[in-house]
Image (cartoon, rainbow, N blue to C red; front, side):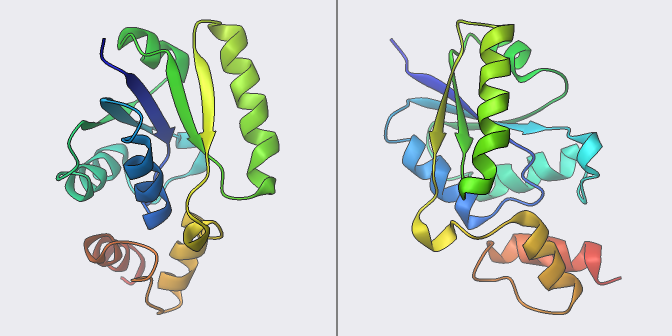
Length: 160
């Protein structure tokens, strides 16, 4: 039996923290679908196709990883792919309340789907996508937080 999971998020942009969770999740699952949420209510900097493309590029060498964009309910996305486990990343205590509410709501929508929380390594626990975007806007380097090609994409978008 193939062990499958979904790691969902907006990934606007993908960070080393996200990649850390992906690589550690691969220790436990044969197939990991990285589900990129449309997240229009969050006003993403990058379009859904751009985020899918960036994630596909930086995870291209990771066996067992598939990147897909989705709109709508995560539980519906999981059901279509016959996946029963959702991975959500937690950086800090401040993330927990929102993620806890989402996990309970998803369970109410589909009680066959479970949510597992994974924390990134300590080195990435304080990094947020909004912080990274702010640093780039102000002319700083985010090379310590994202792969070089992602930093270049951020510069193209934010330093016009």
